[in-house]
Length: 257
Image (cartoon, rainbow, N blue to C red; front, side):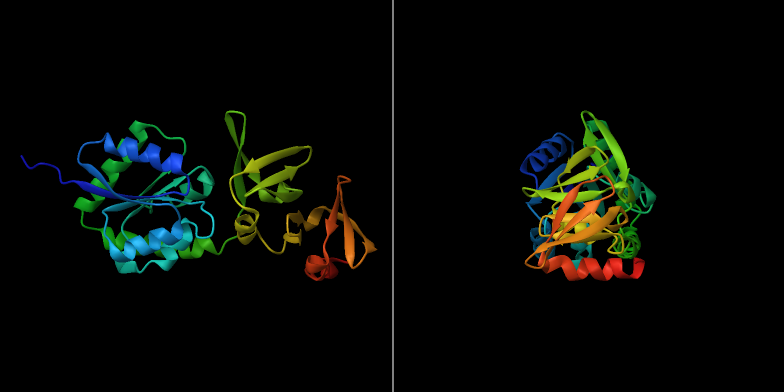
């Protein structure tokens, strides 16, 4: 009986704790070897240009270069099969889960990881790596251009899926972003800039270096001097519009007036 071949794995995640956890879980599995770890998307692209792995466990949400951009910037011939690892957007990921090799939704357990490893081995044995990688790249190319429709947040131990159209405004909080909807607010582990890049620019506009608003929530604008404006939302919240972003906001609101 032939011994199963060793499955080589690259881990890409910006969180050290997440890399350590996944690394230890993979180390506990037979015939699996972690051959590399990358702290961000840029490192991953460079690693894949110079090295090879059977499969990449790739975090979706990372600063500067996210998982989708890693795929876009990696040469097709250097792109191994991808398993997405994410705490966000599980609804979007499920939409192409059948065509992707697999995805792991944080937090996951050893049984779920074992299922993924088995699926990877089966598909590698089928010799269909290049075909599936090409289909995945094409699928992600189309997906990356679509505005974000939902965002997953935590409320205690529960996870909530919020429609982005229900958000009133978003503010930067350190390196993360806080989402405001009604009287509730939720901290996400995504930066304001990364979130802005995935939002529909026809609906969400940055009004300050630390603030984005849903223009459907804008009630009125008032000048407050030095070219700045004060914006009032339908819920009564007042936010400052800096001169740098005033023109962009007024260009979006003008067609609606």
